[in-house]
Amino acid sequence: MSDTQKWYVIKEDDGSCKIVEAIADSLAEPDRNREENFGAKKYWGPFPSAEKAIVARVGLIRAGKCKPV
Image (tube, rainbow, N blue to C red; front, side, top):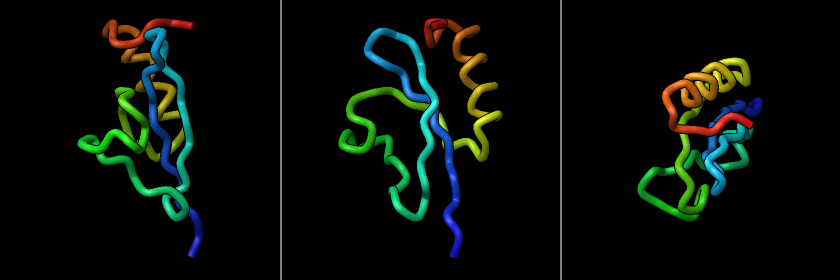
């Protein structure tokens, strides 16, 4: 069984957003109702590729939900 990569956009405390990778076979998918996965941070995803996560991050910046770096 091969690992499946999933990508997430996570909002940092300073308002900027970063893209992180999670391997589905080694990390449970975050549950929006549980704080232990990504802490109390807001996140979007999963996305199937880093490119899709980057596009989503740009959209979040344009929508004012994330600050540009």
